[in-house]
Image 1 (cartoon, protein in one colour):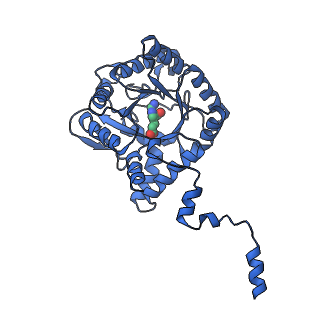
Image 2 (cartoon, rainbow, N blue to C red):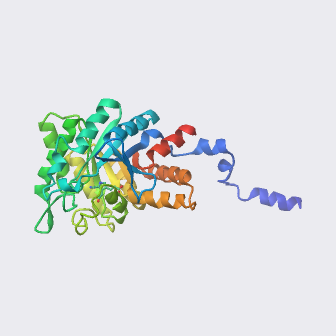
Image 3 (cartoon, rainbow, N blue to C red):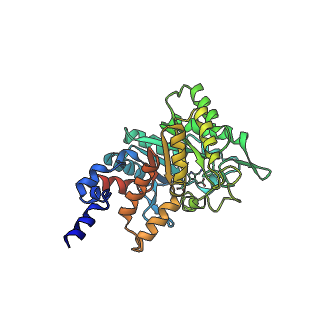
Length: 336
Ligand code: PBG
């Protein structure tokens, strides 16, 4: 009896469960820390006043009129969320093949930026640079002869980045995946004297089926003709992501992003290891819908999967995450 006990006591001598046994000890050995400082909150805006419209395929997410968007931005700031990202739903009547509404200084996005900067100083404002919300073809660039034209699109994207910066946006986030857009935008911003305007490039952005709820939210799914495979990356590729990121850094990106998030954590790790620059991931609309939809049916615990996935992003090498769960995560982290 005694002998058996001794034998058991001797083997295994390395017991990884020792450090896991108590909560204080688990805290002491934790390698990754998730904090509110890691969060960027994407918010959808719409025309009108004092109205919110639920996005059906994103339970719990509403499109907000600018006045309510300002309240949301205040809430985010009060919770300590460093930045918000604006995504507009455009009136279909304003969508054209040249997507000119993208650089309308009186358009919805610019009005949202101005309102946020006026009423909620201190929160970072991120704006997408891409034509899809404004394009009658639903594409991120200008379509001619059935193809999304690269260099012609750059001209429109540059104008968009300039008006958004003029309105007061802090970070331009080109999500269009045209070649050369980061260099073109950096040069144009500098030429106008906006040397402090930051660029977060959607550097490795994949042609993904996880964006569908977002396209519902901004009302571009009906407009989109075909798919985005001639400019967004093939999900079979990862070396190519390093080339994309490398070019964007050379062209002047201050921060880079991998998108979508969870199925692409290997890309995050490679990017972070290869370049060591501020690296972000976008936990996109389809990822949110998947988790929240399951949680609403009682199949998952939303709070737990939210914190687990966000910690996973950080473990993979992210410096921050764009997530529709930012407010919930900030509240949970505060309560901890
Ligand atoms: C548009 C854009 C998309 C997203 C961010 N910017 C969609 C797309 O490329 O079709 C997706 C975000 C999400 O799914 O949450 N250029």
